[in-house]
Every structure is written in structure tokens, then in C-alpha cells.
Image (cartoon, rainbow, N blue to C red; front, side, top):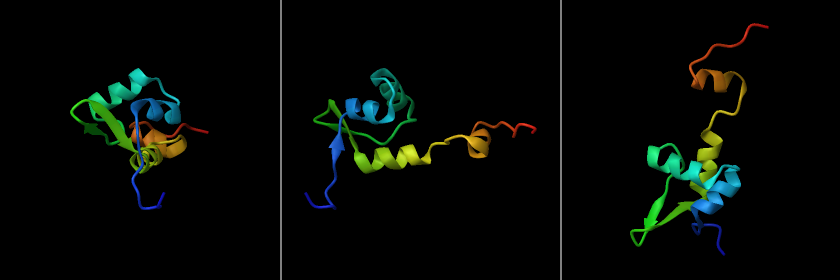
Length: 77
């Protein structure tokens, strides 16, 4: 496989790689909060791996960035 080829995966793979349930991944999709997706033949949902990893990397991961994203303030030390 060439490095430039797109790799598409299912919602099940997205759930596995994110550690979330399939129903959570589906809810994200319906609310427009999850990674980009494509409909194949009008029914099957597929996500590009690079889109999933980019989306995961864009999510707050704790510390000050997470607090800012949630609208909170830094805890007093």
C-alpha cells in the first residue's frame, strides 16, 4: 500500500481506537462532534484514519487547555 492512499474504517474501528462505545461514536456523529465521516452507498459509515487521528489530536487533553475549552478557570494552587 502506498503512503498516499486513504484508509477508511468503520464506526466500530473508531469506537475501538477512541476507547468509547459504539453508541457514543454514533451520538458524536449525529451531533456533529466527532471525526469527519462519509456515507458509502447511502448507508455504510466510513471515516478516514487520518481524519480520526487529527480529530483526536484536536481534543483538549487536560490541564489549562482543557479548562479553557470548557470555559473554566485554572484551580488555585
